[in-house]
Amino acid sequence: MQFIIVILLILAVLLVIFTLQNAMDITLNILFWEIKDAPLVLILLSCIFLGYLISAFYFYPQLWKVKREYKQMLKFNAELKELHQMNETEKPEEESDPEGIELDDDDDDDDTFFKD
Image (spheres, rainbow, N blue to C red):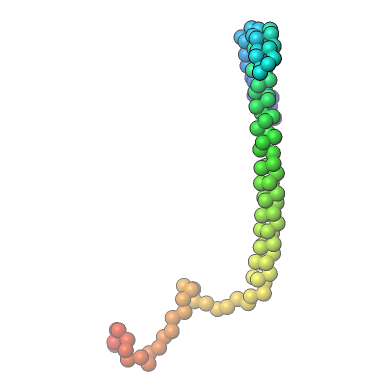
């Protein structure tokens, strides 16, 4: 928590320095309007804020869709786990070879490759 406060203080100091360095007044032309004596800092910060708002409005529907799909996947995963647990409890353990392959020992065959 203290680390976040230190970072915020550093950013506030940098914003003050930025404001003092860009304190000049400019004339801004937007289509048919002309805004005279607008502070450069105000224009820059408002453009940054406007860009953030535009991108947020653009990406929020996609974010909601991803969250909805994530919740559906969590629900599906829980259902699969339940089915897996049900199948494990229903199946009796079968005896199997430790290597997983059952080998038949048929000594009756004379067609074996290795003969005694």
